[in-house]
Image (cartoon, rainbow, N blue to C red; front, side, top):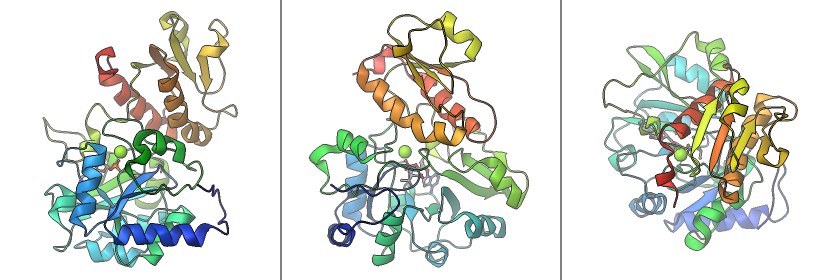
Length: 332
Ligand code: TXA
Ligand code: MG
């Protein structure tokens, strides 16, 4: 398997040709994106869609994001892209932004879980963009992890989860963003963020003004990704203020800190998200470190609550969800 970081190697055309061939045969492969790796298949292929759900062990009630190469291709899948969302697409695509819009009648219900809306994005990774440009169909691609597990940010993570179950993992190097895309739609003419993600709310608001967060009403979860237990390590996880970490610590605990380790806790139990303190760097590292902790056999994870702005909000949201139901009973 080759490594591509920002440039294409001489092997790229051959790998892309193989990827294209497999996708045209209704097979499912792993693709790199700037956010996380995806498990990709032809959106029109019932077989590919079934394989994706089967591999992920994902309930059919949880719909799939469609990945396209151009805004025109996105528009062809939507009834209409409302003006504020189109403004965002024009500015942030290719990039970590997913639009949830009313679907055109040709989009199959099997990928939207029967919903009248479809989620669409243009990913920014050069390898996947090159692939999409060569295909005559869009790709559905959920994150390449089994249902409820941490998203993969390296090809190695995908190999760990799916090993020989898929015929190809396109290795695009570590994901530049490291968090899933931000999902935004409109309700009653107001922009609503359904999933906090790699594109900061502040960036979105610069273009379309204030946005609100989706608040589930009762049991309704139009974005099943909002389900409480999601993106979770299997190790029980808790999030707390930095000052409280030392009192919560016990042996066998892994401690996740933003920038500086905590003097009273053994250093080999501490994981620094970003030596620079940058939230972008922390986001790039978060899932990789959670994978590492999960595999190292710690009994518990304590995470420092991150600053409540930008990507700090996204990461706190993910960690709180991970903490909600990550009980020892869930550990295999
Ligand atoms: O960054 C990303 O978005 C990555 C990369 C691979 O593109 N993909 C990703 O897909 O995170 P997934 O399936 O793991 O998360 C997509 C979320 C899910 O929570 C799903 O329920 C929601 O988007 N979603 C997809 N289509 C939807 C729809 N039609 N209506 C409501 N929610 C939808
Ligand atoms: Mg996912």
